[in-house]
Image 1 (cartoon, one colour):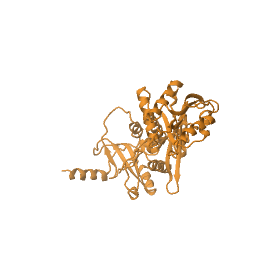
Image 2 (cartoon, rainbow, N blue to C red):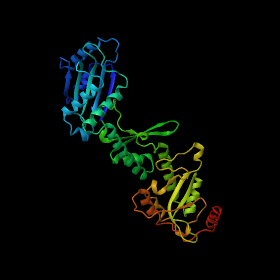
Image 3 (tube, rainbow, N blue to C red):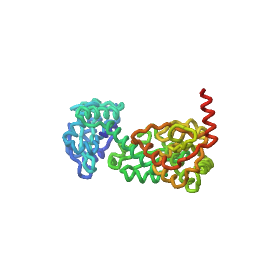
Image 4 (tube, rainbow, N blue to C red):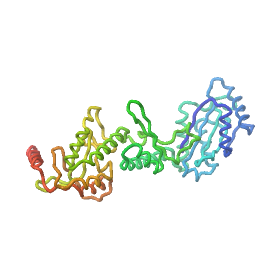
Length: 389
C-alpha cells in the first residue's frame, strides 16, 4: 500500500481538506475532539499543541492508499483499523487528538489522517526522526500480518511489468516519440527529463491507473528508469535509437552486406557478422546475427554491459528490432556475402526456441546464406589453429 507521513505546521485548511474530498469524504475515526466542524477541531488541536513550546511542527499528516485491486476487497472499517494500528506503531496513543477520513472521489479509495503529536497533557509522543520510513515499515508489518501485499511487493511486480513493456516497446520504436506513443497504448505514461548538457537525461514511467492528482504532492507516482532496472540506462536507449536509425537509413541504399558495412563505417559504426555453427572450411555458413557498435566508445569512458548492449560487441540486430531480418532479406543475395577477420562464428545448440533472440535469429538465418568460404578467412582460421598447437 502506498503511504506517506510527515510532521509539519498546519492550518485549518488541512482538516477542511480531510473532511471534504469534493463532498465525498467519510469520517472514519476521531479522538479527543469535541467539535464536528473542521475549523473548530483545528482550534482544539492548536490549544493542546501550544502546551509544548519546544515542538514547532506539531501535526502529523499523511495517508494510506491501497492499490485498486486490494482497496476493492477492504472495507472502510478494515482500512481504518490498519491506519490506526500503523499510527500507534509510530507513537500515537489513546490520548492524542486525531481525525481520519476516507476519500472516495478517485477510483482508488484512500484514508487521510491529521494527528496532534502532543497528547492532551502536552507531551510529544510521536518522534519526527525518519517518520516517513517508520510509518511505511509499520504499514508493511500490518499488511504482512493480514496477508495483504505490501507496497514493496506491489512495487516489485509493477517494476517488472514496466520493464517488460518498456523493452518490448523499445524493440518496435525508432525514437522517443514512438516509444512514448507505444507505451501509452499499453497503459503507461512515459515522462522524460532533460538538461542542457546531455539533452534527454532521465525517464519516469507511470501506470496510468495509478495516477492520483489528489496525492501527487505527497506521493510521486511511478518509477524512474534506474528504479525499474539497474541495467537499462537512458544513455543505452539513446544509443540504441541511434543504431536503429543509422542501420535503417543505410539499408535503403546498400547493395550488399559489404556495402552496408562500409556505409555504417562512414557513419561511425562497426559491423560484425556472427555465423551459426562451427566453422568448417569449404562449407556454407548461415548468418545467425549481426552486431553493431559505435566506433570510439572507449573515448567517452568504459562502456559496461547494459540490457541490450554487450561490451566489445555492441547491439544485436535480432534483439533490438524484430523486423531487421525482413528488411535485410530482400536486399542481399547469397553470392554477395564476404567474410572478414573481425566476423566470428558460434556454436548454437538445437533447443526449443523460447527467447526473443532465438526467435529473431530464426528470421535472420533464412537470408544471406553463402555457398563458399573466402580465401582470406580460410587462411585466418588456418593460422589460428596453428597458433593453438
